[in-house]
Length: 489
Image (cartoon, rainbow, N blue to C red; front, side, top):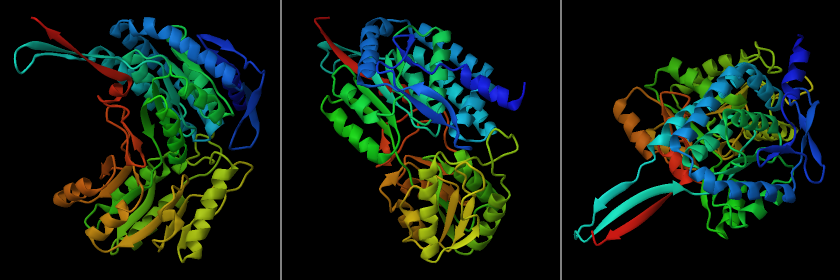
């Protein structure tokens, strides 16, 4: 089988319809939309384009299935997730290629995402049987307290395009474990991974109606009516802060439970006492994971003055050596950005920094080819007033900004409305603790460039979001606590 034939095969084997009530359907209107390969600009396929009528059909299915699904034994829910984990790992190669075709990331990195995504199913398969309550005596001895935890109910899940499989499993896993039915709206750019994931869950034994998937080009027109309907009881969203604010406003009318993983502006702090080799390696991980298209990507590199020139030189060498190209080539390390608008934004930020006096060490412009490529870029002497300092880049650009003192670095790092993650490199234990405690972020990578792990709580503070996903607390977002007071005992 040729490479082209295999690419065609993995796309063809995915349903292009809406999944509603356990069955595949065309959109009521018959509408479809095109899914593009960002490395070539060519069309991969067309997918059913859900409208409001389809969305309400999905909600009807979720509401109808909720009572019986909530009564499913926790072990049975966990076993569905375990089988889902096994199927994801068995089909890792095909799912990774599918993701690369619709999103652009190198296939080796896509394989890593499939494994990461599968781990959420494995983790929450184990948490499904550990939903605990409590029983205690009232302080006055006149009553008993019974505490139980129950599924919050039908949930709306909205996932982004940059991690199309992992962001699905990170939300679906705890919802299944808790006993919640779901309506999933994947990103318009990457619906195929979500549809493939839904089919795997059907094969794993997920009952009809528990999960519906409704790709659409009219996100607002499809989701807002559902959020205002009253039957949706939980919203979990990953995406931009601007969209998150709108969804919070829409959720307020029905006082919905919400969890929001929003934008980031991650500072990466390197002190003079850091292991420079480890800091550069960490910088490559924190910056170049997912082509820099990640909310956790390092956005501002604050490096102590004495170390900054050598750090920038080494980072530039590493970035310049990366191979840029179509992600289906296993030797490629940097794929295209998601679309033309994303590339234009990155170029605008670089132009602004250079116009203010920054120096381009490597990169600084689009790559060759028909796709939306941008060359890995390192800028030095970046002025603090550059737009790069306040705007999430979402691309392979590393701006290096110098600082003199710890206090100066912390003030600059915290000078943002965002607070998702920060990175710190230092070999001084006291400084490590001081800085980690002072940074205004929900997560800190201390001497490491990757923080995401299914077994750890993921989330931010300030305008980076509400709630946590993953870890032991991840299932809490899909559970309500009920107290029963028992008298006369």
